[in-house]
Length: 83
Image (cartoon, rainbow, N blue to C red; front, side, top):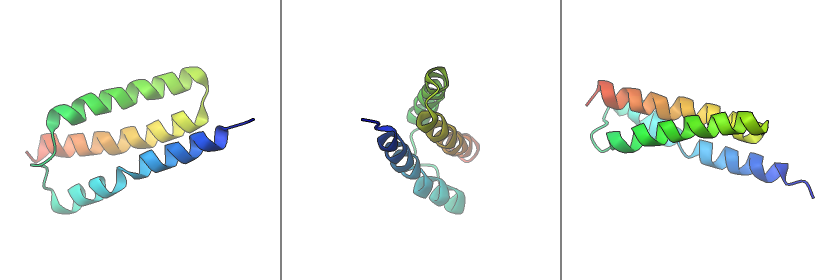
């Protein structure tokens, strides 16, 4: 049984979870309640998941982690810039 669809659903849901935080942070420029340490570690973890997805040739992992890495890096950048 091919469960690739489950990977795409999981990737879509977990990636979309970051959109509200990114939009809110962009609109308000308020990053006081965001943990710098958490976003540094999380962004590094997502980068490694992307490398692993590339290694496995897993498109759900690759696509989701590219988008999530972009969103997490954007929030991390804003945290560093607007603290």
